[in-house]
Length: 134
Image 1 (cartoon, helix red, strand yellow):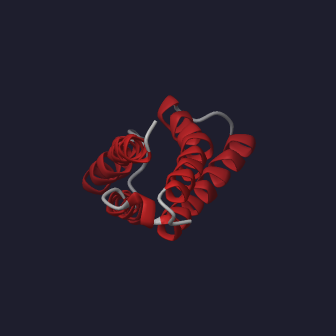
Image 2 (cartoon, rainbow, N blue to C red; image 1 turned 135 degrees about the vertical axis):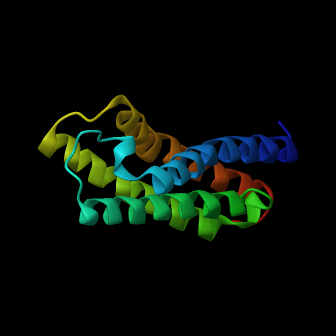
Image 3 (cartoon, rainbow, N blue to C red; image 1 turned 120 degrees about the vertical axis):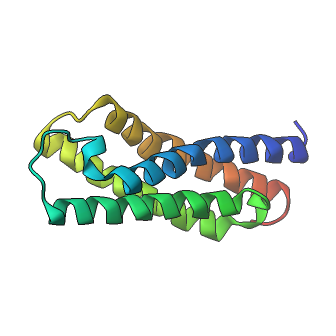
């Protein structure tokens, strides 16, 4: 595969993966914790914290999307964003051990955070090397 073809595949994969934080982040900011926890008592603190974290999730998606056009040259930013996602995944893994298994959506998130994102980081590094940007 040519470097340009591999770069385009990586760009497509990252753009596709960005749809998750962009979509879920925006919906969660708009709807608040009711999106995942219907029936919980109303709490301004819970709502505030949930929407704050959802805003960060949305911003993370925007930041990853900003890497797509010149992905071979955005290694530092991509690694920093990836490290943030992995840190969140490790926190989610801790929750799994402490509180038990979360919903299917959160389990998929865990796979993305500790599986897909690290693989995308390695792929970005490979593409950067092929373009002489590593």
